[in-house]
Image (cartoon, rainbow, N blue to C red; front, side):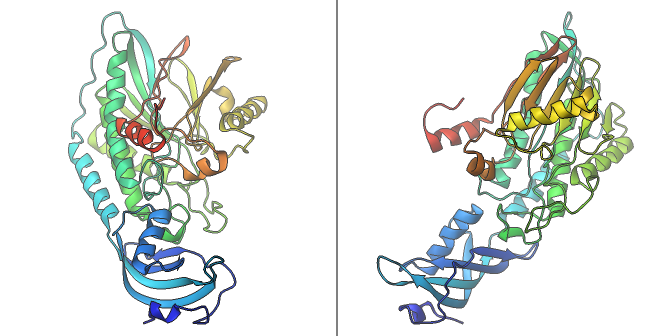
Length: 418
């Protein structure tokens, strides 16, 4: 066992010329792993571990504890003091609160699901027939707590709110509109995915792939159950995405076929569940193209994509619009849609209607995206964007935000948050 006191001077140990990598390695399901980090100046090892764990993983102070120091090396010198920085490798333990919270939430949601199909609310006299859309995207279940709006616990609470808020929003439309069906498109990145090294990947994964999928199925089933209470028919669909497929750690490149996607596993599983439960008013629709779902809801034709395939061209909205125009010109799948829904960029935006088309960018339901915030210099509140469709077009498009997220944003940046 190495002792940090061995490195009170620059001559001790091995001098490293390059900056050592800060990383955390835990095997799936294990609460004991190895941490490698740097101590600057006279910092104490446990305090520096807390600092790096908070910065890299978004975990609370005291969540991770040093069990044994395995190695300490000097690295460079502080230009102001002349003292060495210290590189530490240690065996550490962590609290496994995320897995416990996930199981608790899954059990709670599944326990609340009806075993019999509830009757839909009757439409009010004089209400206009319509379709209703409840899009869900970028929940990235399994992502840790490094994001602006928290990690897995906050995402699960946000999903619980979303299931109820979709219904409350639909009830607010009832005097004017009578939905004949509700469409629930899963626009991708339902799970965070696993890239081979779990807690040492850039945007940390706090649940393994099996836990992520189990929780995603429970969360989507909860939203579908609420839709069954609201409309005579519910259509559930989805598309392939980047996080829901297996990727290489180094390049983030997808290595599995587009149909080998956790969203499609979820859809096939729920299709069997609803068939066995006799939920004949719920229809699960698999897209003909894994990347593009196009559904005629009886009022408008609406397409859904994740948004990772179009090349980035300045802004999220411009990237999607240019891709859609090319699809229309080539008469590919999305050409049939009057409205296109897109996720991926964790931003809410709207383009159109123009030339009979409308593009709707969907906010995420996870804690946000530090990646897009860092690269694009902008961020959007997590939330949901339900809307009504009639023969006249999109109506009542709303952007709804969990009140807890509004309070978090106000505390972080101050002032009023739109």
